[in-house]
Image (cartoon, one colour):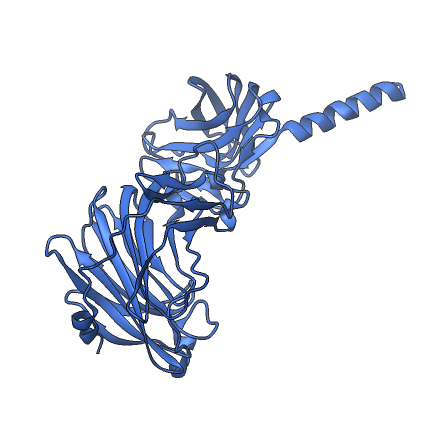
Length: 420
């Protein structure tokens, strides 16, 4: 074989290797039960024995054309598994036999992807109930449509956390911050945070199919990120007061501090109103309080108040966010409207906050690009997840129309008395 042929063969092999895309099984999602099998970076997907459970991958195809699809898995020696893969409205089946610890490949052949955009890859088990479908390791893509395709290849399956950052340059001594939030698309394991500041956060959360919460939390001083038992007493925030029915305790693993929540079944599509206050008590301590307007009682209620040490400041670094805090359903879209933001200075004057800039967490840098901000119905909106084409540029500034309606029903002279 002459050198020219060898060179051509090498170039062909290199081009094929560059075109092939291996999407780890641990990046996939399970439907309809997001916890219906075990998913881990070490083992891939294991314990898949229910044929009603589907395995889903999502990716952005940038080059229409042919796509050669297969799945790598492990099966006990001699065991057999029949699987079906659906792509772009077409499905192909494949049967594989196990080889013990060695990988086997279920080859589904070639699919035609007629247009660029996000695509769902649905893997189904055609085996009997209770029969393991195999220990899945990867979805393998090759062909013209695999070129430059974008998939999340990281173990973190959460949608990106997205934020509204409120510029308040020129204002100091901000003692209150008000924001309204309406959950629009509200799947399980979502936190819509309304009033964030340099020392804490306040918003509403979907914890389970049967439980939703109003949450107010304040961080300790110091740099402990995980275990509050390691935080010395002088660095701990302390509870001053809490409302009726409110639980108060500790939190950790994302910084440490004081946590409080009220179990309340807030409704999707219904506006919720939040207001946080700051009251410096001396040069080194500030009491932060979270108030929520109860829709049925039609009055403000205290969630909790916490005294923060090594502070003595007013509110600054104001923000809101939308977070997917449970990654096993990170394929779902989350969206909320954030409107009518106001902040008050210590002289009692309310100022309407009309601008906000967009930011996101590191997951939004490259792994998950389905993250958005904009203005809708005269309010800011945040959206994350759903594998929706396009994205909002990090740092983009948006302006909403003015309402001219500050929270006039919030009366400090009565509510501040509840702080102590």
